[in-house]
Length: 261
Image (cartoon, rainbow, N blue to C red; front, side, top):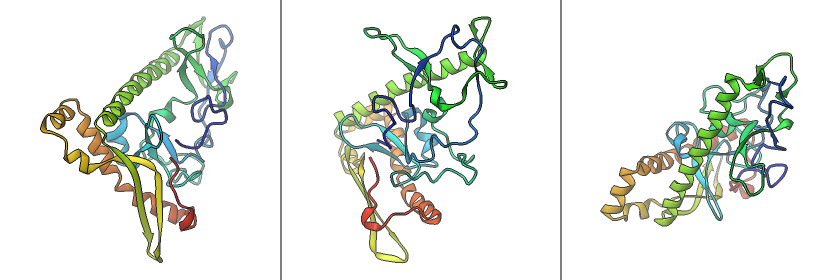
């Protein structure tokens, strides 16, 4: 997927995880991020199927290569390049912000071996959760504040959306609709040296057209066909992303241009 997190066993962005509790964090608050430094070098962000329709307006949506592919929104075509970070170090305000980003620094995680129970945790390395003078209070009289309850609800919804995403990917694989992706983009001043991007997967339109009427109707009934079309429409933004990198001076040499998976 995108650039590996600092610790391989932790999800993207997260450097550490601590369970949130009223005993240790009774006086802690959550401040806002001053910038998007944690995101600045990430070119690909995990995406859920519930976000396809919104995200496809701004980002190409592709799938990771290898086993257990997952959908990602491309913020750049090359490793380490995020074209949606402004000069102020913040995300541009006109683009959709994936839930994966909005969830950070919180997430639900298993903290006890042998138990499937999930606890609300946070990344202390994010620098926005602590004993601050200002911010959103996490607990009041040892009880979660409305802010904390909303965070918990958001994380629960994210987990549920993640399960729907896994179901969607399972159906794509069952129908053998995924293929290795490749796109060649030529710059006007270098017509003989195309930039070729690989390392991702996409829906094979030919196989989609060859589905039986019954199979296609089932995709339509479950809403999957809308998601597939959102993914396919979004691929037109590959060129837009290329032009953004070109304007920002972040294109590599053509021979070094494979998209990260």
